[in-house]
Length: 367
Image 1 (cartoon, rainbow, N blue to C red):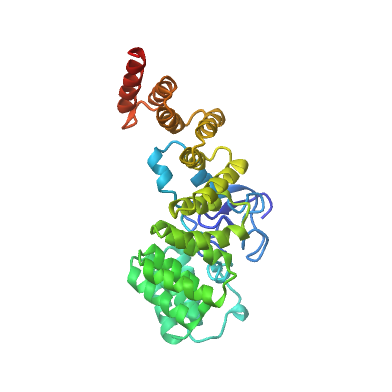
Image 2 (cartoon, rainbow, N blue to C red):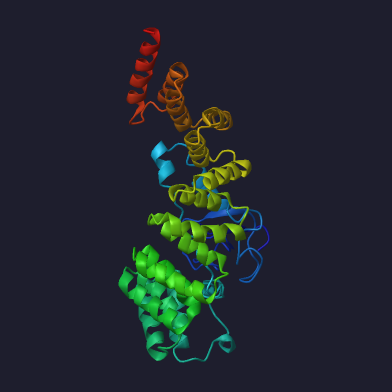
């Protein structure tokens, strides 16, 4: 493995070997994942597989995706969301494809249906979904109480297009073994069955209230559904466990903001900018929060600082123009609007901003 780069899972950030088809931590497909510098893990249980990459912060992949949204419009600041990073029910489930083609017979399990299960798992990794479903169905028929078989069968059904069948298999796996309950909850969430997913997550937390990753998953699910007050409570628990994650802190701040806890939100946005000065979303929301508190000069200063840090982001100019106009500083506001239109000439509101700038300038000349 020396010199071989690792593949970073886009769902949870774990490092995987390049030849693996599924993440060893969260079982999500590695299709579309990117190679990362540094060696790949030497074994399934090696450092970097079960958690975040050793050379990338735990929030690295998610932070790049979320904190670099500066080119979006102001409306983007009101729809911050991140796909929830999954939990790790069992890191062995989707690593069979990394074994040699000929597995020594002594290493094969002897449970009923084991041969069909091994064959189905290999076919799943090879992309033969029809064959995988058939062999895994036989394994489940031979051992209907085997939760691991059902879990993998659920993956095969889901990837083959049978979403309802996959959910049914995952639900039965969770019923038989509560270690799969969080995985079932995530599947329900992806299927849009929010209320059922919330119930599953709450059952997991009832048995293990300290599980920060479940608080994070549930918090983000509630966040996406607009239940900000409940989301904030769970995101708070998750953020306490991962105090160095600015993405999670930004989501917590927005949930607090939307649930009326404005002062706490402002404080958290400031913390995000301390570790991620280029976090345009947090910067815009912080400026608006300060402005709403009557701290207009501070709000303008926050935006001007952001323009220095990320001068290529036009939305900061637009927001600056808005705050300056509402602060009765028309000349400066017009300049900011013109800068925005110059930087984003094809934006849907570019012409509107130019017209507004012209009206502000005309108003100043007639005074």
